[in-house]
Amino acid sequence: MTFRPGRTSGRLVLLVALPLAVLFLPAAVVRLALSALSPFLSVSSALAARAAGLTLLCALPMAVLVVWRRRFFCRFLCPVGWLLTTCGRLRPGAHYTYARVPRLGQWAALLTLGGAVAACPLFLFLDPLVLFSGAAGATAGAHWAYAVAFAGLVLLSCALPGLWCARLCPLGGFQDLVADVKAFNPRGVPPEAPEPAAGEAKGLARRVFFGLCGGAAVAVATPRLAPAAAPVPLRPPGTVDEDMLWTLCARCGNCVRACPAGIIRPDLAPSHPTGLLLPALDFSEAYCLDDCARCGEACPTGAIAHLSIAAKNERPIGLARIDQAACLLSIEVECGVCVTVCPRKAIFEEFSKQTYSASMHVDAARCNGCGACLAVCPPQAIAIEPLDGVPAQPDGNA
Image 1: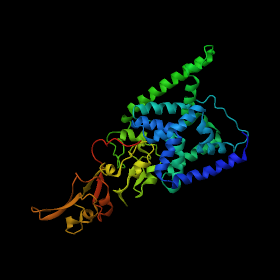
Image 2: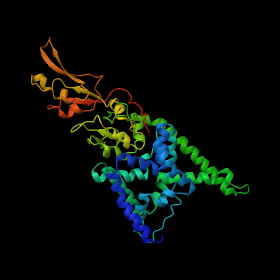
Image 3: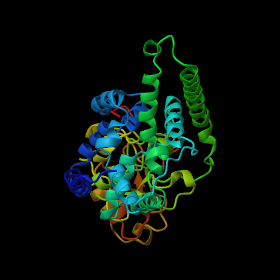
Image 4: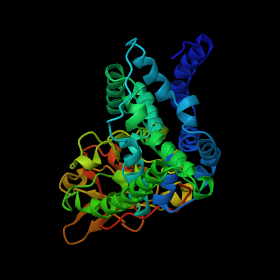
């Protein structure tokens, strides 16, 4: 490949600017940028969430460019591709075609699209923009695990230049599928087309059929992968059902960076491997603010619904439980700080004439599990427990 100083220096500037943009631009802007630049991410998440919202609309220009020119995004815009190509050049003279390596990127794209039809996309977390966003966020301590994964890609590209982009990347595979389908359009194939072209068309049709059907079949079977008795951590308000969350969530870290209270953390020790890096809530130092709905605004896939503040406050996270034996009132010490801080007036003191003692109780109809009481309780006698049943599905823009 010919060295072009102007193009190379411009890409280096962008490689520095893009992580800064991920860190300092509003998370809602990053969310739209991810969807606008990756038709694989936007189409799959829209199919899974059953919502053709703003993110899908933003992706239409890129989809048109991808149809117009094969791998347009990879050639001109992909920051991951630029970095990995640069790493591959560290081995001068190395040239690999990988003709015998299966097109795993195409298969990943097809399985994801097929799973999305069954509301369970499978490989959104492998989108290169998601990997880039997660790794950039790791500089702020949000997602160090993605930094490790990204470093693995860099090492792979140093050892086997071009393998990721040519055969493994699902966004690249998605673009190849679009280009191949366009190339084998019956209206564009002349009657005297040679037999190999017809054979390739049949091979593409079989690949698309088996990929989509296989993805849908795996999506139907995925709820059985996680044990029913596995404890489920608290999730941000508006999060989809657990059976759908582990595939619809791209683990990009947008919600982690967007939360002003800092209570959303990537789950690094889940009860089941499918929950790795999913967003979980930690109320040890702060709580879910009543005037904030940024996590849903930042989510590019609809795993956390894009809700208004009023609608978000009506989505319960869990229910506060008070350990009466640990409460200071049990030893006749007046406290009541939980009553004072509760924004929904869901905690009240009750006096029993039978025992001639006071105790704290929670009004389940008012409590939305925001965690305000938990963080301030001196003896740590309050816990927020997940609600029984299935979490509500999103109804905002995906």
